[in-house]
Amino acid sequence: MGYPCVRLAGKFLASFDDKAQRLVVKLPREWVTQLIDNGDGDPFAPAGKVFSEWVSIPSVDRDLWATLLAEAVEFARRGLKT
Image (cartoon, rainbow, N blue to C red; front, side, top):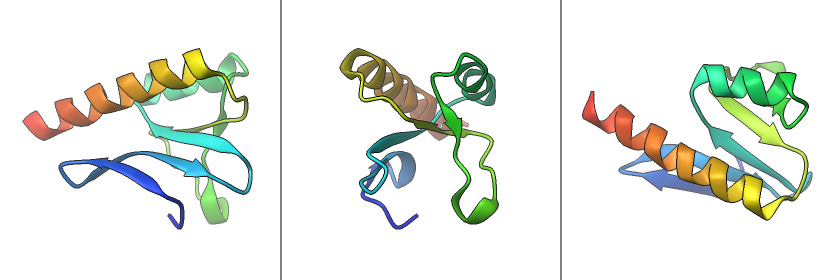
């Protein structure tokens, strides 16, 4: 993706867009949709392609970021079990 990334067992789960100062996380599609619909996130669409399990978080909110990062880790862990 061209950004510093966090991985778990080789799977990407989060990144930081240093140019836009945004957290980018991989979450279940339903939560991504909810975050976008609530105005807490934007679709992650590098080069115009929307990634349905990724969301870009425009605000710097420590509590929100901590929650989303914890959920991204859990989502990645569930993916390792399948």
